[in-house]
Image 1 (cartoon, helix red, strand yellow):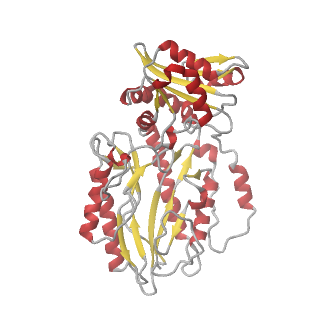
Image 2 (spheres, rainbow, N blue to C red):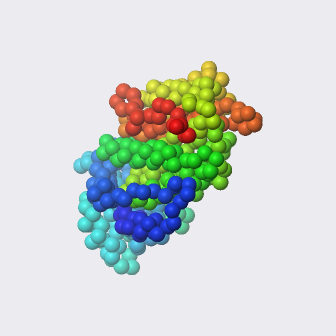
Image 3 (cartoon, one colour):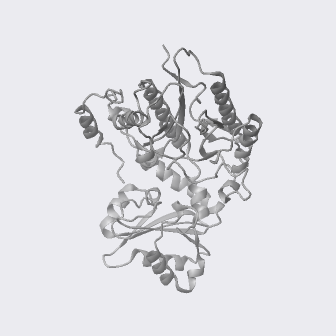
Length: 445
């Protein structure tokens, strides 16, 4: 993965060559990206995460050592986090605590060792001669140290901790021999490590959230009722992303999801024409520096002929959705379960007469839109998923919705899902950016 925005010059040039867009979706921004973004902070943040957060994660997960195997073309999803994203020949990364403190070692083929040393991520880079196995050398070291447990990336429930391939696992088991019983899943370790974000990461996530919110407001301002389609609003947002050198927070086909009709769930924007009386939902996120993502929703109402404000029923539904968001935020604090956050707003939804909403109140967000951490859901399920039983901790970041669902005149359902982002603090949680307070009005004179 490359962390540069040199491609943006090409994108901007391409955009400049495109014909004018009658729907108003073509961006007019001319952004000096080098000034706007500055140097990519990931290299230093990664070092800090490894040296400050990983030792504690090992202790919390009760793991002696962690072995990550990286290789070219089909790499482990954790590779970028441990410095193995540029692996060509197979490399092994080992992390452990002992009486002397925390240690990080890289067993690297000679061809990549110099570059890995230049990154200065690991305490030691051990050069493996051509023709010899980095994994075998790492296993020999593991046996010499006599670790009680060796975490490896195999997990049935956490894809970020499931990067070890079948053939790699076979090789590792063979090399470990009678010590193979020491191999355990890294699931809990990866959870403990990735779920916590450093303060400087939270600041970057604030920027990502603000961009997503600002872009959506600009997109809504471009709408011409009766002419503009949901897909054209999505195209406007794609142009904004290109101009600012940011990428998609999740799969490009469904980012953004612009929906002026009945609920479609996780979906793509269609060619539906936006009409007066529509409530528009946009689910959108951007990725900064190729690492950190946001997940923000903004809602708008299209005024009908003669209307100057939101109709009473829609305004009521909006206020109910906002109240759900506030209830969820108010329940967030260190030590509570994910399902407790879901329950706080489900109780309010029942009081306010909301129809059933099948989605969880929220989810962790950071390196991906649905990140590692507690699931904020399950309060109404007979058996909540294990992630909903996890406890919130300081430094966790969530995207979460304030829900209210009702029947439209045609019998279909529409849901207000006021999605915001928040970080858990010492005593509670705070929004990353100011939340949406009022529906955005489209067609106001």
